[in-house]
Length: 419
Ligand code: EPZ
Image 1 (cartoon, rainbow, N blue to C red):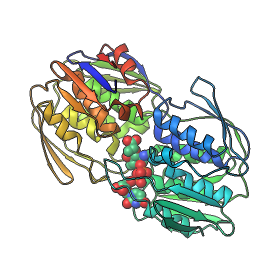
Image 2 (cartoon, rainbow, N blue to C red):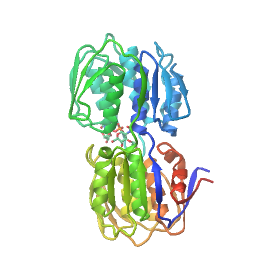
Image 3 (cartoon, rainbow, N blue to C red):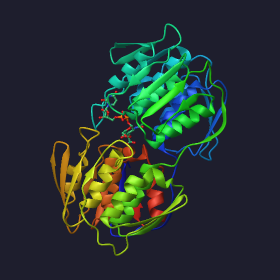
Image 4 (cartoon, rainbow, N blue to C red):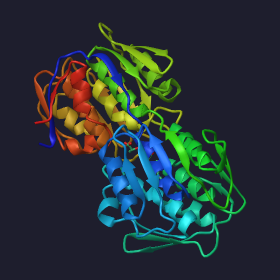
């Protein structure tokens, strides 16, 4: 069935290994279409969004073999055999990250405009403006964006009105094969941007400054292959387990973590009263007997508090005595989980971009439904602490970004089933 069934009340205890980062893997899979020779990627998470992206690039002529140990071998076609398949593109917004690579390598791209989703309209104006700045012609025809480059893209100075992650990635990838230098300003600084830039440089690109406000790219005529590139760990999966430890008053050791990437989450959890200790590529999260405090949260571009952790924090704060205020600055509709939490007894009042959470002594298990990936994760977290059984429907949303979440939780003592 497409649901999680959780019996709450069990503190999470033990060790959990964090998988590769979904949002780095998806961008790097798109960038692999620019590689002139074979690429081997490691630490690729086995999640449904990645499986869909692999199907998309296979449909376009890439030869892809999964080696079963989270590694994937890719040989991109010298010419794109076909446009990305609509039925798959509609399932995966991140397929919009194919636009830059296809334009730069093949001179042509036709992508189905990814629909909006539950968390917001999610336009692509910044992507199109930046690619046009490099000389691409972008036309629109019935839900498709059709990009052409009459001649080789030409480096330019581009300022992003907002530090959009996807726009930064699309324009950075395209600029790698443009003629001359591109200077990108007011860019996103997320770790996934840095990982993508490192991968592109592994292929022979010349990208400098990723992770800062300004990225400079010296265009090269073509890109080679990469014998081995390991994707960074998923900072949002790590944060999700940290919050699950907090709400269940558990004690966890997270393995395969880059502490710097989760610093905004660690800082906020310490403010709540959770003891978080970094130790190399491990994190110890100690919340047993902790008396948690309410906190205020503002989601911001990295290194601010990540929007992808907002729903999970709301679930936890719903059980913390006192008033917490959450401001969602990134997406215009990312509080839908509040209605489902309220069905479990939470007290949340949403006004536009602000949610006011009044902690309650306990949440109660009932039937709830995930509206998006992170809302689904938040409802699982709520179920871990709730009294009685919680059924979280639309589990397929959760499978998009978490590899066998129920198995990882069961190994930590949770009572979770996928009937
Ligand atoms: C990426 O989405 C992530 N997805 C999202 O993760 C994440 O929430 C988001 O970045 C912010 O960190 C992937 O990397 C695959 P944006 P993206 O462009 O690139 C507006 C998850 O749960 N905007 O930084 O789509 C946009 O509407 C997912 O793993 C424009 O207005 O995010 C939004 O309000 C959810 N015009 C804001 O910027 C544009 O051209 C941030 O969007 C582009 C974006």
